[in-house]
Amino acid sequence: MKKQGFLFLLLFLASLVSTAQNGPVDSIRFFTDEGLIEVSLTTDLKKLQNEKKPDVFQPASITLRFPDSTVITENIGASARGNFRRNYCRIPPMMLNFRNPGSPRLHSLGKLKMVIGCGVNETDETLILKEYLVYKIYNLIDDRSFRVRLMRVNYTDSRNKIKPFSQYAFLIEDDADMAKRNGCVKKKEVKLMTEATNRDMMTTVAIFQYMIGNTDWAVPNNHNVKLIYDKERKLAPPFVVPYDFDYSGLVDASYAVPNEVIGTEKVTERVYRGFPRTMEEIGLSLEIFVNKKEAIFQLINNFPLLSVKIKKEMTGYLEEFYEFINDKRKVRSVFVENARTF
Image (cartoon, rainbow, N blue to C red; front, side, top):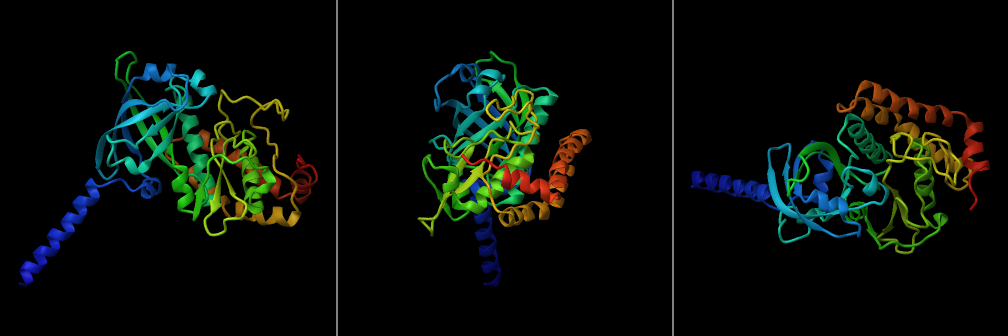
């Protein structure tokens, strides 16, 4: 009887492993795992380039090869997204739709933005990897942030009009999943003034954008930010979650142009776009950045896919920020006395 019981236990455990290997992908774990995913994506790339309307999904086939040797091949939808890069890049950034009958195991991932390079040369690869690291840096600052998953994507044109090519890319976590794991809910784009959001988080977001040299964001028109709402405190101001950092000075993309309204001459110039705060409020927020400095620099320096030169440029740019926040006079001038008021 003991042998039969032991055999039953083994069969039961084996069935659990089989179910896990063949069941739906865990959408939360998908973005907490760090391993590189090898991806093959086949679709009509020329049609994707020429489509001008938003949210028009076309058939695509995708194969994901996970680090644990799991391989999933399913049919999904792909659409072009973005405005400037759709016209500027070799192929546009994409939205991948896993919510269809042809993708039972990937269905849980929902619709995910895929960030890709404008081209396939080393510079394009570097920009993608740098922006990926910016997301990872903000993950260290606040859990209420978008997680990302790095991939190596092999593209095949289904009509053989474009030669196959490969490049690094990354997927951005679904906003509903991001909100859910933080005890929040997302809402459709809500028009709010910047100061109607959670004050403490808005302070941190504004300082983070200053740290990375990014002025390409705005709360009132939901530009490169998402608002999420605490499920338990329904009347509380929403949290602001930033994304899309390719126009930041830390990434320093060749196609990024200075903001004419702000008056900068190059994207690496830092401009604080937050509203005035007290020195006490600024101090509490800056403490977060100081405490995370070592982890941020380790993240960059230990990243194997960037050259030593690029990593030194990134840490050097961030070191300028840390030197700046050590000067209370400069901090008061930028974040308090000369902050925007409208």
